[in-house]
Image 1 (cartoon, rainbow, N blue to C red):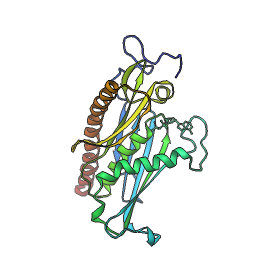
Image 2 (cartoon, rainbow, N blue to C red; image 1 turned 60 degrees about the vertical axis):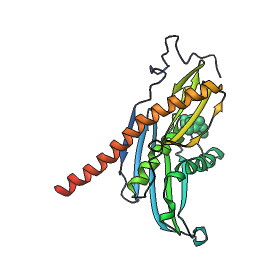
Image 3 (spheres, helix red, strand yellow; image 1 turned 90 degrees about the vertical axis):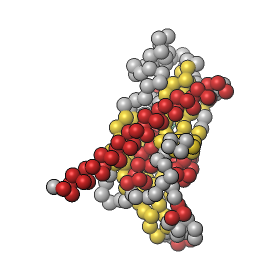
Amino acid sequence: MSSQILLSPDGIRTDGRRIDEMRKVKMEVGLLKNCSGSAYIEQGKTKIIVAVHGPREAHPKYLALPHRAVLRTRYHMAPFSTSERKSPAPSRREIELTKVIREALEPAVLLEEFPKTVIDVFIEVLQADAGTRSAGVTAASLALAEAGIPMRDLVTAVAVGKLEGKVVLDLNEEEDEHGQADMPVAMMPNINKITLLQLNGRLTGEELKEGLEVARKGISQLYQMQKQALTMRYSATVQQEEE
Ligand code: ADP
């Protein structure tokens, strides 16, 4: 917490956004050729690329499960992604986020269709400005879709937080660092199920409810963009084939 004013009395944030306004988002599907699926997301200054490999035979073999695929994730921040150079060795935070992201994606993937295989999801943060776990989840589900892996729904995520006692959508790094709370939420929007909910800081019961409502609105905007990004990917393929 700090004495810095993060929200003006008329409800404007330090980057000019209103409380319920998301940062500018850009998504692209299918930009890498040496993997089964890939996606890129920019959410404000946060930039992440995700690549999916598989399903492929599990190596080492003891990893394989007889009745379903194993979903493996790796969340990694590039050494140049943060304002101070980050050590390339995996930090405790990266190990935690690797697990959190896997658990956010797992309920959506029909793992039982690919027994004895492994699906790898590599999440590479190129530039971090908060919200990397949520943007990572959003992009990962796009990369899984491009890899042709059947899913119950896409997974879409955003963080909400609290600034000067007000619930706000999609924190940037300054807000994350100096704000009063940070709550990442991931959902399968179409089937209305939450797959990730974390809270750093304090919210009252009312604020928690409001936070979930604000997150849901943000997620619904992101979900439309995900569907658009997938449509763009496949209309580009059809155009290429026609040429
Ligand atoms: P998330 O990126 O999901 O919001 P955190 O709340 O842990 O996860 O991190 C918030 C932000 O703090 C990151 O997105 C990044 O901008 C910054 N950050 C995290 N780790 C580091 C680090 N080792 N060095 C510099 N900045 C970092």
